[in-house]
Image (cartoon, rainbow, N blue to C red; front, side):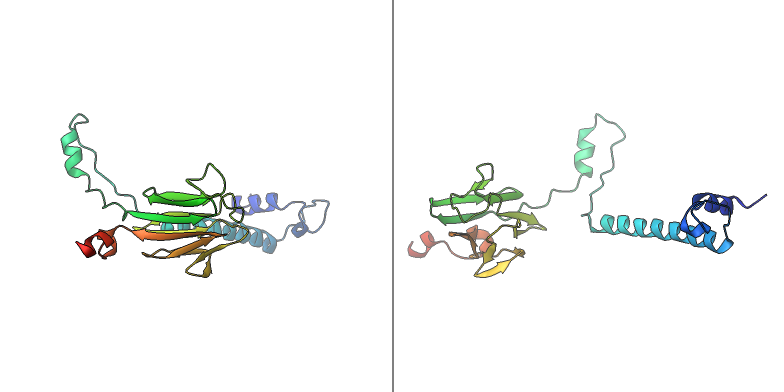
Length: 196
């Protein structure tokens, strides 16, 4: 009786170019069976590597031990880690052909564009419907171009994705946005405090 793995490999490649012909005749050689098995193992190994690479890039999830008594919420509160400090509060000072406005940057993901469904809708024909987004990554705000037609500039330089600092100027079409961190976060004095 043939070995089960060799039989399975021979069955898989019957009729393939490795089998010796289109007729599917059993002209299987041990070398082609081994080759087929190695190809399957290589594909499986690559798939596993890609999966584990994605898993390593995910942010860690805090695990909290559940209390023995499900009604004991006080125990669960004691076991839960303190929530991380929130993101620095910031604002966008927007100057566009449609006017000027100040927008609080307090959400995790802020999409900027001409589309009225965007978190920050900009009335500028040079701005794409979904032009760019400002998002939070590890307590740092970033701006990312969303494959816009005219691109996104930060401090005069074209960018795909870049972290933002206090005072950075973002250009979307004819619209200028100045990113400002809150006074306490930026370490600068407010204009009101200078003369008082």
